Amino acid sequence: MRVYALATLICLAIAGCSSGAENEATPEPSSESSAPTTVPTPDVPKTPVEEFRTSFTPRPDIVRARNTPVESWSEVNPNAIALNFTAGTPECYGVDPVVTETDTTVEVAVRTGVLPETADKMCVLISVMGTVEVPLQAPVGDRTVVGR
Image 1 (cartoon, rainbow, N blue to C red):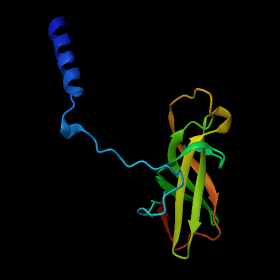
Image 2 (cartoon, helix red, strand yellow; image 1 turned 180 degrees about the vertical axis):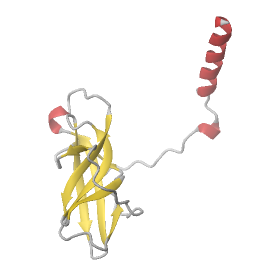
Image 3 (spheres, helix red, strand yellow; image 1 turned 30 degrees about the vertical axis):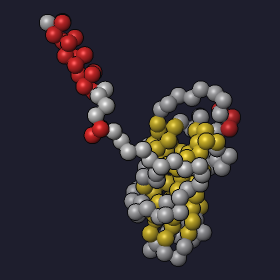
Image 4 (cartoon, rainbow, N blue to C red; image 1 turned 90 degrees about the vertical axis):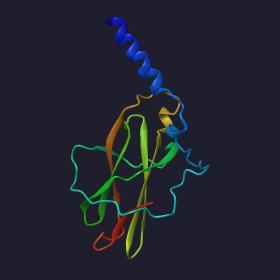
């Protein structure tokens, strides 16, 4: 029975490691810039304030920054919103939110990266559901919140 189980596991491992063309992912184009893209994406959904999320403080000095999707947003007060995202732990990773306001939209983006003081240290690879509060020049009102 053990031999049969071992043979089955080996077959599954080999099948899972196959390099069939139908399983290969198309490589994404690389970008040298870490700045947020300028093409707006679909509306970011509004959610109630989610108290369980880990709070981050904006850190524009992060290194190795990359764009991170904004999952949702919450109204904190009329002139501030919270952007919700997934990132590494705040002991090693930081966020740099970017907000651009127009008369009709509030474009939001979050860049995540390593904190300068931990850039040469080992960090645990655990993701947390994070949030960062950002001020607005005017209340959201009837404007649409979109990612970019």
